[in-house]
Image 1 (cartoon, rainbow, N blue to C red):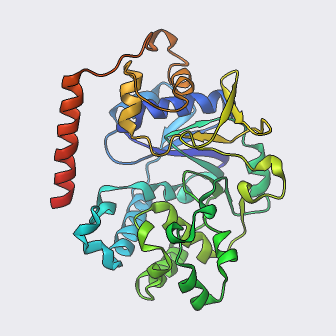
Image 2 (image 1 turned 90 degrees about the horizontal axis):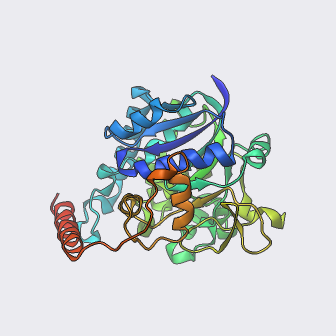
Length: 340
């Protein structure tokens, strides 16, 4: 076992984003820290090539861990009545998603760890996270808890009726799954079985807002709520220096030597998260296509940090034929999902 390391979840689809993340960790966190990539699926040719070129990066391979989390989320999501509602437009979505594989980090070799989604850039050292992990079992840095009640992760009235916790207290425990620090061994077999029984047999899946039921982050929020372990979220800190933005598509930042800081107060941020942008945008951008992504220059800087000669010299819009082909393929993919 190792004292501390970093996890991410990736496959070849997010290869360009993975390379940018790895480079940003090397520059802004540490060049020596061990990074373990949890496989999203078996599409790993490019990922394995990248691992071979980096001595401190490895692939997570524990079939038992992968299977136990797959069995958990399949059974839990199958129990929900919305599972069979085709009119939601995402029937059986979870069967096409392995996002909850990131929970394998709890079974890994790092005693303490930080997880980054692959569509992120690391922007500062993790000293503050590690300090908080001396006091807390879960550390987050996001604003999920501030979502309006109708679209928040939880059904607050249901939870208050079940365990007498008011919305204000439950809301403070909501978090994302795109960046978190925690410890090995949490959610072991016995605890996961208890959670499974509560969700399935006791139908505590009703605690999760049906509007967001298909989100791995909301299931994770339920798990941390029910575990009743100490949790810290930097965005709820009493120290104003801790409270920053992190989303590329919504928060203003200032670039100082290719490191982003919160615009208000120039406060350091842990990471830039490119949420809501498809992975294909970054693939096209890396090939020189003019794609509208906020902070795309920062992405390109880290993506080609080790290969600056390969960075596109200029960005050009896609041809009309390319645009038409992509729209047609997108329509076909949506049809396949609907009828599957």
